[in-house]
Image 1 (cartoon, one colour):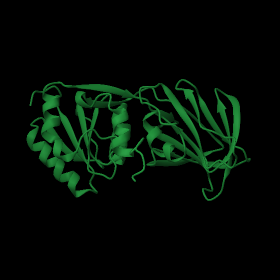
Image 2 (cartoon, one colour):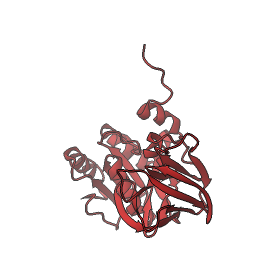
Image 3 (tube, one colour):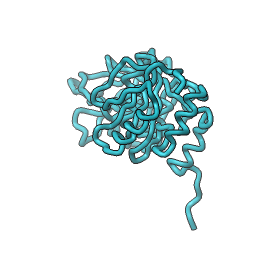
Image 4 (spheres, one colour):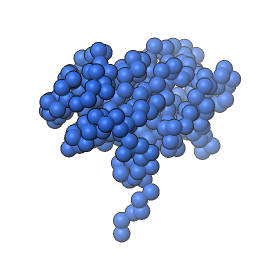
Amino acid sequence: MQKIFEKIGIIYNSDIIEAKNLAKNINKKINNSIVFSHDNLKDDINLAIAIGGDGTFLKCARHYSNKNIPLLGFNVGRLGYLAQAKPDEIDFVIEKLKNNDFTIENRLMLKTNDKIALNDIVIKGINCARTATLDLYINNKKLCSYVSDGLIISTPTGSTAYSLSAGGPIVNPSIDCFLIIPICAHTLNMRPIIVPSNEKITVKIHENEEKLNVFCDGQVDFVVENEITIEKNENYAKLLILNQQKDRFYDILKEKLHWSLSPEK
């Protein structure tokens, strides 16, 4: 194929046999490509093709965002909401790449300490089996306290993930903002809030000398003392969007989440 990308990395989820087989099939059709697993990510590539489910895609997005490497996904997982292609669309994808018929879309990411996330950062008390009182600060000014199972700080990309399950709004990924959603808040008057992406979000545990559990994209977890600050990551995840699928955000909502469909009679 025409070398728009000098070297293409085809990354498969090593836990999914179908993913490895699909990676080999794609590799046979793209001369300037190498195959490796998501357990051993390589950096000497110009395009990353992730084969697996959303978890595989998220891991690759975090890894390659700071390296300015675009990412395309083939779904062989359960939902594959972030993936651009299905296993039977190899030739279609290669044709699009040959003809330079795609765009690179920047997606907001979150950062805290030295960790980043494409979908969300979830904060809970050290004892996840009970509610915690979490104080929310925006730009160092206290906004409110939540008595809840935790808080989700989400990007627009993550608004259709855990945030949606917790009652958060669906937000188009082109909008420059972050979502703050309480998880099972023990009150009737606490609602999700949307803030500009340049705001500094700080969450403090209300009780003294408590710790916080933090989860990035549901894959990276760690513990912090007392409080945590979350901000916009300076780098974006770069998603390769095939032009035929551009502006398909609302179509994907209907296709994969069955949004707006009336109950069957």
